[in-house]
Every structure is written in structure tokens, then in C-alpha cells.
Length: 166
Image (spheres, rainbow, N blue to C red):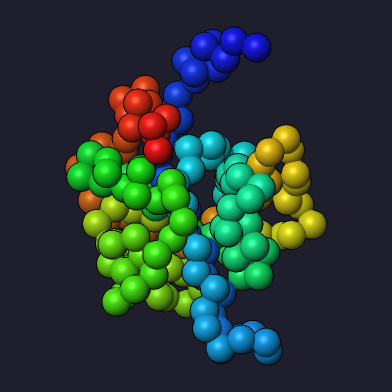
């Protein structure tokens, strides 16, 4: 099948993070932390505010989202264009960074520094669906934070080559 027409659709580029504290787990003392580049994200409800996000079936993010029942979406802008590739592979967590990007833990969130902003969603695992080679998670937006409204979010048409080569 020729997917050229589907490549004409536009999306943003985001880094999705999930965190489940080791303190809350009975079988391990280390946190579950995962992050990945996503671009299939859409708002699906105004009241309550909800989004749907597609995560590859084999991504560590799915397991971490399932454990934590939360995810955080970071909106990327031009200064983070290199993050598209950086987060398209396995996460390396060391020295307070994930894939070389500083982060902090707040409540059930793993927050990356320097983005346009971020929002955190709570999911109902019973509403996640496996569709093709992705899991669709539906999350209610429970917290938002705008870092810099002057930054312009990255669009897939602008950065298509970067992500396809990742």
C-alpha cells in the first residue's frame, strides 16, 4: 500500500514520559521510568479534557503507563528538534538525566526541562485499546504547565526526515 497520502497528515512532535515510584512497588525498590518520541496525539474531549495517544506495542512506555496509570506529554519546539531522535530509542537514565536531558520527579510525573510546556494525564487501563501495532491510551488531563508561550511547537511536516531516519 502506498502511504504517501497518509504522510500528508500533520502532527506535532512530543516526548511522552511515565514514572512509577519504586516506593510504591512491592517487588522492586527502583523507579519505573520510560520516555519516548510520539506524534500520534489528539484531544478527544473538552469536558473532561481528554487526549488519546498511540504508543508502539513493544515500547517500555506501555508497561510503565500501565503501572503508573499516568503519562506526561512534553510539547517540543525548535530548540528540542534533536530530542526527536534522542527519544526514538531506548531510554538511558543516568546522573539525573534521561537520554542526556535533565529531568525532575514531581508527584507521579517525570518532567523534562526546556520544553514549550507539558500536561499530565491519568488513564483508565480499561479504556486503553490495542490497535494494529500500537496501544491507544486515553487520558484525562489533570495538570498543565506552560513554560514558554513564545516557542513554536514542532510539526511533522517540518521535521519529517529527522524522525523517519531515527
